[in-house]
Length: 300
Ligand SMILES: Cc1cc2nc3c(=O)[nH]c(=O)nc-3n(C[C@H](O)[C@H](O)[C@H](O)COP(=O)(O)OP(=O)(O)OC[C@H]3O[C@@H](n4cnc5c(N)ncnc54)[C@H](O)[C@@H]3O)c2cc1C
Image (cartoon, rainbow, N blue to C red; front, side, top):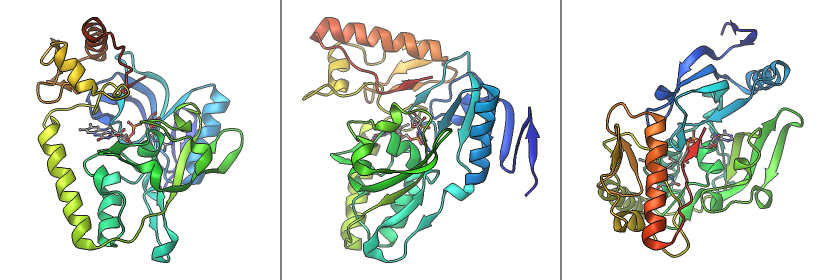
């Protein structure tokens, strides 16, 4: 593979200037990134990190962009998405756990696990993220979260280099982890412990979870999943519905009529439309229930 050069950055993977973030996020919204890079491997990734440090540019690592709203002004730094060598799965003995690259899609991981009769991930089916994004946000569904399965995470930053983070230091919480605070730590690899299961039972749990999602989520329109975290002991969606916000619309951004905690892009929504809608929903929910909703969607 040849070295490519763009604005002083030389790597083997892709480098694109002025990349539209609409193409890299599930909401299909956002301005341009100054540079977009897809480092091919760890060596490339290290080059990107040192380039950012030396040139004073900030970076944002993304997975599938399924929990991100990028502002219309774009990102004046380097957007990094892990390339193909970060999508490997290694399994030696079934009982020893599996090691997966952070760029792998969660759906490929779930397919692999069910094929190998490994359980513990079925309820996460349908979450359109990568393993890295799912660790950072501790993706969860129906009471199961990815953090429960983690043994350790390998990460990289621009001062320490390559290091291991033990499970107890990852501080998994509801849709969060230490990686949401340490934004310069890039997850590269994850070791998971998945208990052995019976294939028919795994497939039946997968089917049930997929059906529930298909029924409850507006999957035919671009979105970023739930916009707000559920407050303790109640559902954000229900509060939004009760506050009369279902169907509320600004430009092409609309509170879904199918699931009130989703904002969907009906065509050409701008980030400012979504942000105004979020503010209006929060105000109405606060006025009707006294509860202040906390956004789950990350605005960049
Ligand atoms: C239709 C739909 C349904 C969804 N359903 C669910 C659901 O049921 N449960 C749920 O939890 N979520 C759900 N989501 C939200 C989303 O898919 C998850 O949060 C997912 O885990 C995000 O992964 P991603 O790769 O897209 O991350 P991104 O959105 O790209 O990034 C999310 C965060 O992770 C960080 N990050 C990404 N990769 C790395 C890395 N390698 N190292 C360090 N940090 C990294 C980013 O900087 C960012 O802060 C849904 C989204 C959609 C669109």
